[in-house]
Image (cartoon, protein in one colour):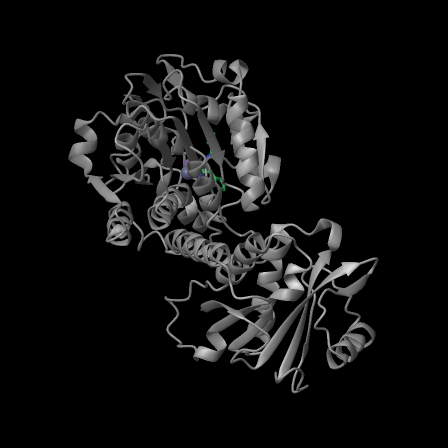
Length: 500
Ligand code: BES
Ligand code: MN
Ligand code: ZN
């Protein structure tokens, strides 16, 4: 989809889109250019279609011939007092769905009607563009029936600005384009099935995507992983015919002396549970167990494309978790990268094993801060559902920084507890650590406490459990695809990196 900014009031498009906020229970024409014809259409929308200007509401008029356009679409923004960038992102998704539903390929959006409702026009442009571009994603490449272009996408959207578009507005659009493109790439990595997205392929696709961006990608094979004492990553991969990979991405946007921000992501390309095998119901969802790694890859690509002035390292341990003849067995003990011994009581708690080595390696790079993202625990779904990503950190300042980043990007984050009780629960019987807690409760916090054992003292670190938010969230976020990967946490990770 092509998205451009252009001074209004006209553009080469069949359809005019007007935004309306809900004010005292009724839609409020937020534009001075609201002509008599538009006003009478709005009256019709209110009386015939019960249009109120609520979030996700839209009314389409075909062949009404108003203001030089063939069709008109009214889109609700929701209540004026609650109007924030997320409401505009949702409005972008509403526009996209309505245009697609009515098979409109080119539309002009009234910027004036939008800017009247939300004060900062650059914020509005970025959010609207994200809503549109994130809606313009579908994982359908494996379906053999070709779709006609008109059915498939809304091809051109022009946002009409009252004045000539400013540099700040153009920059906001560009930022939205890069963020959405990279988030959509993260989704694509997640949606691609396990047989087509093995650790080897994940590494190859990362290298391919990084070409020309200034991002350096280094890939370790099994022999190197073994040589580097990544005992956790190696152990998890033992039950599979697919070799593990360790993906290292480096972006240098600041001086050589500036310490990097480090991101680590779980790249488990398929999690069967291993010998502690999972029940078969919904096991297919475990192709998404590499969404943390995919988010880190998307983050590094976005930072490089944005030419962010920061040094960043991205680390993705990638493996399958399978119950093959050489598989890790309950009770087995291995030695991790940082020298700690770990007994594995449940081979389905594998994410923490591969992340442990990566966090230890990340710590060796002496980062200013380290963040990891992982579809780590089913327990976080019980606690937070599919709306909020659970954030675990003992660092109060870092927690605040993360909350602020989340507020900017619209990705919901929620601080979860992590303390010495959880740490105590992860002590081993015959090794330093055990990979599951003796008790069954607070499973997400004990998992975080296990990860903490691999982060060196003094490094500000936060763990993001995205098991609930990485896929199937379209019921909450209409710009996310149905039954697909959401691409969550890319935008917040980019925001965090840029804050250093
Ligand atoms: N990948 C799963 C976590 C998961 C579960 C993600 C459901 C998304 C949806 C992880 O590897 C896992 O299996 N965790 C176990 C840990 C347990 C054995 C301590 C879990 O959550 O059940
Ligand atoms: Mn598992
Ligand atoms: Zn897993």
